[in-house]
Image 1 (cartoon, one colour):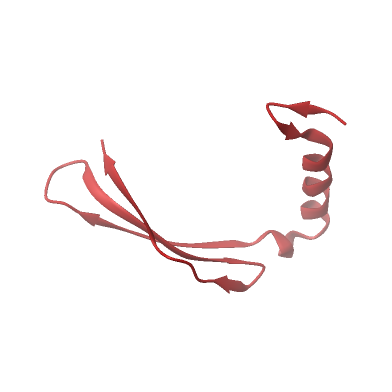
Image 2 (cartoon, one colour; image 1 turned 90 degrees about the vertical axis):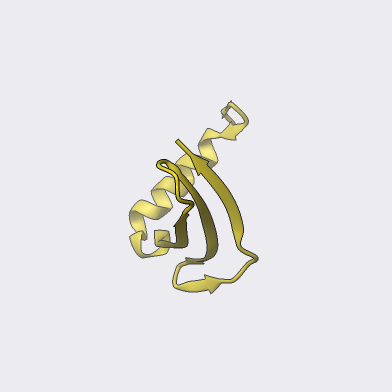
Length: 68
């Protein structure tokens, strides 16, 4: 087993090979929207439900403030 920065490289390679052989299983859908807050470079981003392999996973929305 090879571990680098707390990542099991062997398992990561196994997952990469699986996705290479099954590209339809690697589809990820994300729902996000940004709301402009009236100042250049400032918005609030809401990250909502997501989907994996065609299954929608609802969860409580997360909010992030983005200031550039």
